Amino acid sequence: MNIAKDYLSQTYTAQGKIMCYDLMIESMQKDILLFNNDSVIIQRLKDELSEYEAQKKYWINKKAEIKQFLLNLNIRENIKQVLILRFVELKKRREIRSILHYSLSYIDRLLKQGLFFIDEKLKYSRQKVVI
View (cartoon, rainbow, N blue to C red):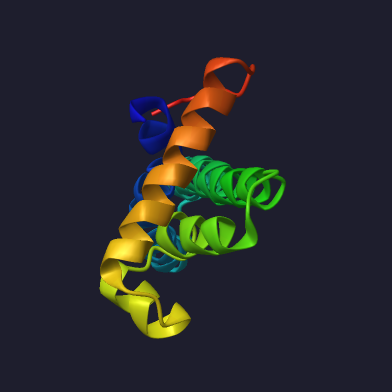
């Protein structure tokens, strides 16, 4: 199940990176306004801003890729729901319990079944697991 966890956990990394890039982009935009008379500095800031925006887009696309991967799984709908809530919506087990009205032990079983299924699928596919 490690392959599946590694792949799906990228959404947690993505969320953190997206938040960081949002802050850096906001800061860079303010800096650009401060240095509006210095074209050299402005160009450097714009280049850096462009890189931050590209990185943010990469992580947004990574989250979308994982969500689409989960949506396309040929697996029971209740397992799919739990996986999406856990790894796309980043809900905790107790939050999933409140949303779906399942017991924590049932949620754990569904997660385990889903991760096992995904692990097998990823072992035999070309899906990249990049961390």
